[in-house]
View (cartoon, rainbow, N blue to C red):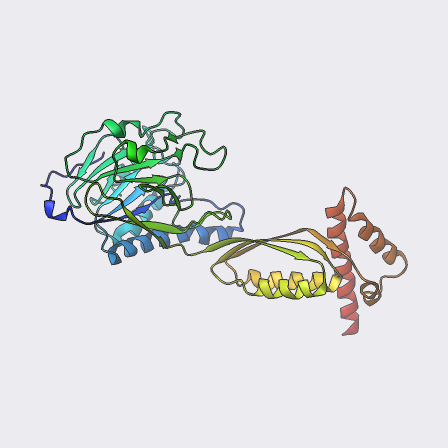
Length: 388
């Protein structure tokens, strides 16, 4: 299913070649940790980012786009999703060169065989399903692909690169999806291994990798592009594509990361100790905007008035931010004497509040904290209603 154009190679184009390296689009990804409406918007953003990549390639005068696997997040995406993906790529009419990754492996029956049956793949898109050289005429390149034909392998599928014969004078470009051994975080390099130093050992001018979702340089000729639209809270330099410039064969590539993602994913940790901390927290939360996806973790302690202000700020921010996940489990409520007096919690209710307050330090501390906030809030509302 891969193609090798039969037209003659244009030797005049061997001097400067511009490529756009991207990977890990994860089209069809489900964002189960979010509310359904937010999850749908985050999934939709992945299509608009591909449209942005196509425009970027056109604006930069790129000769070809390299897509290093995991185009789709799962084999079972809907037919509509397959069509939408290839329509999103229409803004760049030059060559798109793709391989399957572990999420969309080139199985005997896969998302790719369905795409071919649907007639969804345009003629300028080449899917490399076999580990064999692909000679591209314009730009003049030799592509060495290492497609995954199953989700997990324990052999290095790039090993054949070194012995591959390609026409003299053509830049050799590797395209692979997996874990470079000894480079990524502990526990990452257990499957789909790629040997460190493969680019130099196989005489590659550039090795375009996918699998790691952040932009990462492995060595002078080998990079992970990362996902072009951030999809997790880990700070891994994602939301980018790589512009790769080659002065023919043999010279080192010039690689420039270019931001292309829409949403900013961030973990915000706030610790409250004194009243001014609440002021700063409310101000920080109010600054979240429509392109922020936030995991907010709040700890420390505050009185009931501070707790009320914090909840109000979070409620308002959820109407502004793309998504705001807030965890206040580690925030201890410390009602002051004035708090208790204001909500008129004397007698039995006062005893209950005191018991819940003390219970925050016990094994059921989170339950006590939630009950304290709920009861204090109800009493506060009752007091406010009586005052009207």
